[in-house]
Image (cartoon, rainbow, N blue to C red; front, side, top):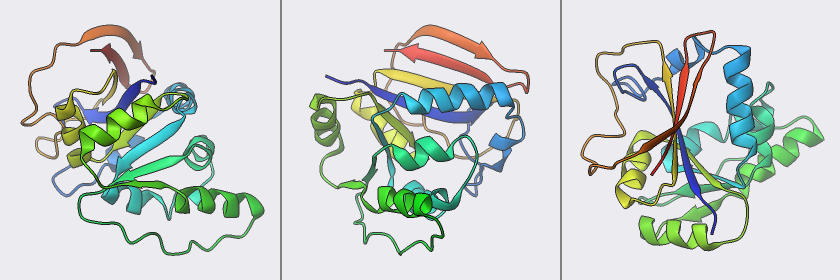
Length: 195
């Protein structure tokens, strides 16, 4: 059985995005060391899963992106979870063969629209490397509520938002064990917890 890892960036006051859904503050404190750690965490996954809204915002961006996160985001298979249906993706204009492969990776994402807990149990029962859940806020809240996450990677950024979207509102109490803490030069602190 493969494990399910949740990876989420948040503000010091526990928000994953501002009230308008923006999270551009994530990049302000990022540094080379924190990016290398995050890329290494991403490369360990055999499947990246996310909610429909996150998928639809990321899919047009990543095939033509460059930088350290482009490889894992374009090469690792993806899954999109939806309760409101999914019409598929509009074609992404590509220039190079690599961009065409990346666009095909996003277009070939598996779509899950059944019971979330059942779909996750089925995915965990498949052979392969770990599953990495990366967003959005509503999807993460629902995923946490299933009790099926094995490992939490909570990346705290040195910013307070005052208000915004939380992934922990309304979820049941869950006792976690801190297994690793990494502090980075830009002020980011990554906490890894096991259930």
